[in-house]
Image (cartoon, rainbow, N blue to C red; front, side):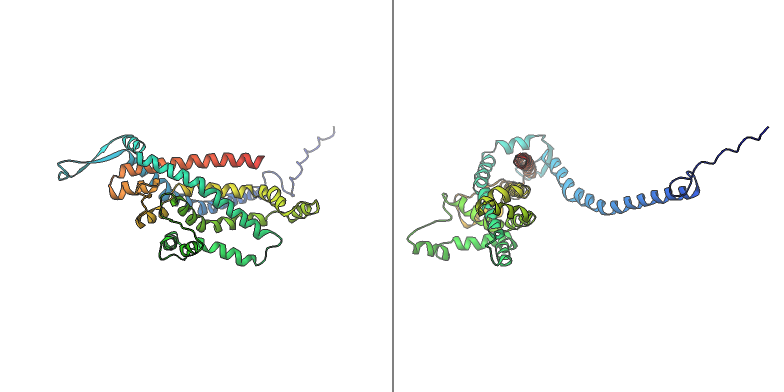
Length: 328
C-alpha cells in the first residue's frame, strides 16, 4: 500500500513571508511603533494649543460665569465692609433692565448698519481695482492701503480726533474754503465720524484678504469671460465676486464680531467732549463703567456674557446666510 502523501505546506504570504513568521511579527510591531510615534508627535503639537485655550479662553469664561452669579453688598454705610452674596440671575436681569445697556445695543446696531457695507464694499472694490488688468504699481497700492491697519487703534483715533478738531484740522479748513461746514463731534455726525475712523483703519486689511482670494481664481476663467465679450464690471460681479464668496463671508463674520466690541473710538470721542457719546454709548463701554467706575464686577461679568452670546448668535446667522449665498 502506498504511503500517504505529506501535507503540502501553505504558500508564503505576500512579500515572501509566511503569516505568523517572525518577520511578519517584526513588521507589525514596527508599524505599531510608528503609529505610536506619530501620535506622540501630533500630541506634542496639539497639547500646547489646548493648554493655552484652557488658560486664556475657557478659564476666563468659567470665572466670568461664576462672578456673574454673585453680588457684593456693603453694610454700615460702607464702613462695615463688603460681603459677597449669591444672587443667581439678578445681575443678568439688572443689566437687561438697564435702559443705558439696551440703548448701547441700538447704537451698535446703527453703527454696524453703516460700517459693514462701507468697509466690506470699499475693501472689495479696492481689491477688484488692484486685481484688474489695467492696474499699475500694485505692490505700492497694497502697501499704501494696508498701512493704516499697521497703526495702533489708539494712535489712529487720536490722529483723527486731531483732524476732526476745529482750528487744528486741515480737513475742516478745506471744507470751509469750499463754502461748506461740518461738525464731526455733533450728535448728527457722530456715527459717520466713528465709521470713517474704523473703516480707514480696517479697509486695507480686508482688501488684502480679498486680493489674495482673487489671485487664486484660475486665469482661464477670466480669459474665457473676455473671449465671450464680458466687460470688466460684469466679470468682476458675476465671476470674481462669487468665486471669493468664502473670503467675503469670513470678512463679514470677523467684522460683525469686532464691531460689537467697539470701544476705543467712541471712548476717545466722549473724552473729547462729544455730548452724544456718554460713558454707556457701546456695550463694552457699559461693561467698563460697571467694572472700573462702579466696581460692580458681577454686573460687568453678566453684561460681558450677554455680549458674548450676541457674538455667537451673529456668527451663526452670518455663517448660515453666507452658506446659502455660496450655495446659490
